[in-house]
Length: 122
Image (cartoon, rainbow, N blue to C red; front, top):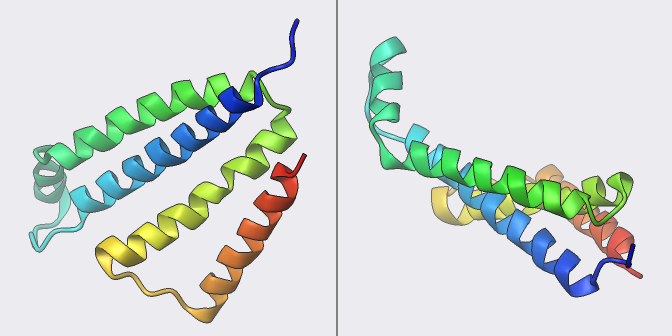
């Protein structure tokens, strides 16, 4: 069996980050609403929004991309590289939803990004 192409691994990793982030943001958009109902009414409202279904579609796509990615890299490396999703989602939440990034969260982002960079080095 041939060693996987670095370009294919990078493409799948990037695609995983993009699709996972899109899914997280779509779920947040579905749940983020001024609609003040509770219980079943709130769930019905969220289920009627296209954002929820986009999020579900993204998660299905991410599952397939993740399987392809893990078929090419060791599990320990893949999971660590996948951690960058946390950073991207937190930054996108800040940009799109105005979520607050405390000093501790910012420090966490920097530590995760540093770890991913170290793992990703050849």
